[in-house]
Image 1 (tube, rainbow, N blue to C red):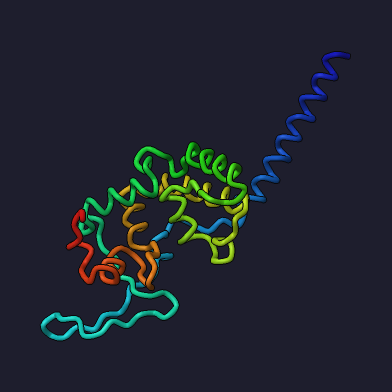
Image 2 (image 1 turned 90 degrees about the horizontal axis):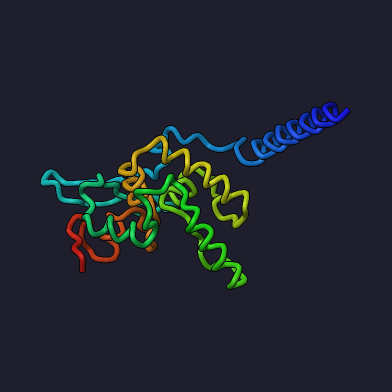
Amino acid sequence: MMLRNWRFLLLISITGLLLAGGVLYAWLIVGLPSFYDLHSQAIAPSTKIYDRHDRLLYEIIDPHVGKHTPLPLDEIPLYLRQATIATEDANFYSNPGVDFRAILRALIINLRGGEVISGGSTITQQLARNLLLSPEERVQRTLTRKLRESILAWRLARTYTKYEILALYLNESYYGNLAYGVEAAAQAYFGKSASELDLA
């Protein structure tokens, strides 16, 4: 009799776990965008018209996007890369796309403040949110969006190198003043190319 009850409880437990797993799968993973061709989700560069001496005559800027000139990572100054990592994701090179300590810290700060003050997103999570989630989902401040973003970031970290993720992040982030990426931001704020920026 005791053995029969134990088997019944085990069967109920396994069924419950499978059902919970199916619900979680349907809630978080079904409908996630593909992350295999991340570069196709990137913003198209601005169109530039040059004269025969390679002088820029005119830049055609998409009115819905703004200026955008992607650069290879080795043309972005080391100090700019290091400052971005220090500011946005100090554990960038060691985290698996998600920094659980940063999320926990942000949760505590937000609970103490009574509102969303800190986000705790890694560079990889921000890239996943900005390139892969729909504009509607991107602005939501919900647990579902955060979990889906985390799943995508975890997958990105297993598919792309840190080098590729950082390059995409620096080239796709919005820096204000209609500038997407560090090159457009350097032009907008300092009137020079990002490669000419120094520590100051």
